Length: 181
Image 1: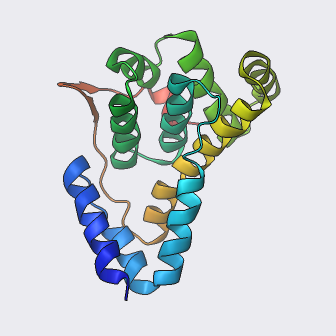
Image 2: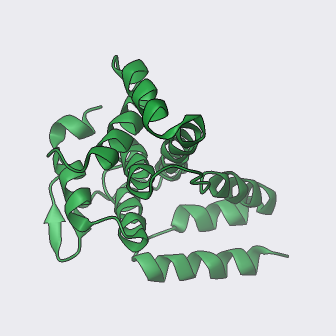
């Protein structure tokens, strides 16, 4: 009954971001309930709370980067740009160049959280010291949930396309040390 609405929503997202959401269409066709629950879980991560915008979006980029080789990372980057994160900040994060301290902390914490890095405890303490425990939760949720799209895509056998990430008019080469998490 809701399938036509789900597919309309997904087609709109595909057009807006130039994204192939075949795997999400497939999920909607397999089970409306599963699709609704997946969407509900994804929207839970959209709680920014008191987390600074750039750190919050940087954690989303980190989460997508841990799991993805392009398309989902592109959307995370596009969403950050739409929210006002400077393109130079996003380019720096992806290329491994130091950038704005807040965005860098959100990115480093997101990667450490999802890869169980040895420096996770110190990064967690720094996020909490700077912005408080609610911001830590918001940044953590964003990092966790941003990896769900590429994981589901891979689970359904659709993770076949790699691409370079575009920020504005230029392509960014992701630093290999960041991808090899």
